[in-house]
Image 1 (cartoon, rainbow, N blue to C red):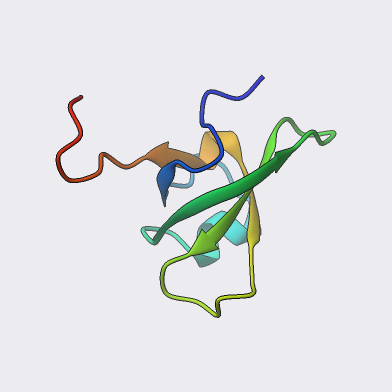
Image 2 (image 1 turned 90 degrees about the vertical axis):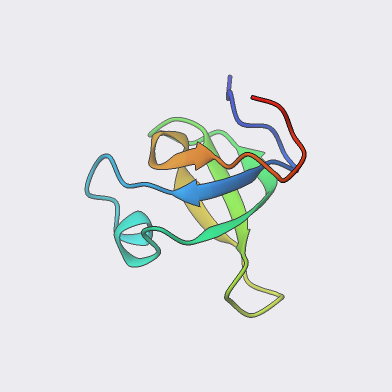
Length: 73
């Protein structure tokens, strides 16, 4: 089970060597869907600074939630 839900704003914060997380380190985006994988939950993220049709798959441990403006911690 994932602790980051679809629709959450996230920042890529690599905690292990996973090529997509190293490539997009520090960038933000929106989780569009989740899927189980052999390595744990895979979260697909539409990056803020990328083509609108591309979603990148990340392992959950390489993402952190981003607090949106007006949202309480």
